[in-house]
Length: 115
Length: 110
Picture 1 (cartoon, rainbow over the protein chains, first blue to last red):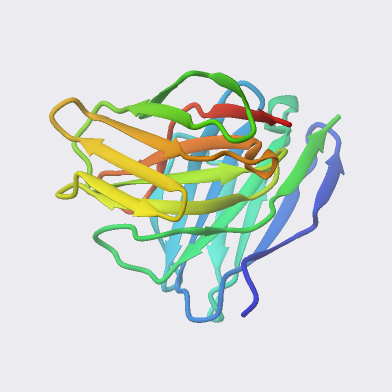
Picture 2 (cartoon, one colour):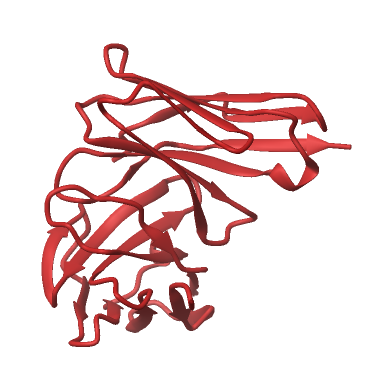
């Protein structure tokens, strides 16, 4: 069974540009989560989508947005990129329980570098 | 914001020794999970312990949870060089998001 996949593996952008990151969950999983892992800041929760809707959002500005498609894959969009957006962006999926998170399965990540 | 604080931040041991990592958190939880991350890559789920459990085993891993002290520990027995990685605890307290600790970098030398 295929795991969580993310694309691209690496992305280089300049300040002010937009970045789009993609994630495909494990087959049968309806929940998708996005996390940011920046140097010195640890893993920070960004967004949670379930059944096509945004369920929860971390403490990030509105220029971080995303969506979940009918096939449960997801996109993370970062507008007006800033240097501090450089980080590893991790996507995870789970079976999707709105009350309590069970195991989340992570993809390999997209490393975003903003110059 | 980080829910958990882990200690030590870094741990270096020799192959065959046991490694113990600790995690403390601040709010009540539904469950606590431990993950491993190799060299800035994706996270691998190791074990989940629910708030009403006190101890759990999986292979060479032993996790304990003390909700009165808001702390957990991960013990890796008979460590191997392949165990070299960063280890994170993550808590779940509603709303399905994982809140990660700061991580422990484990180095296992031959």
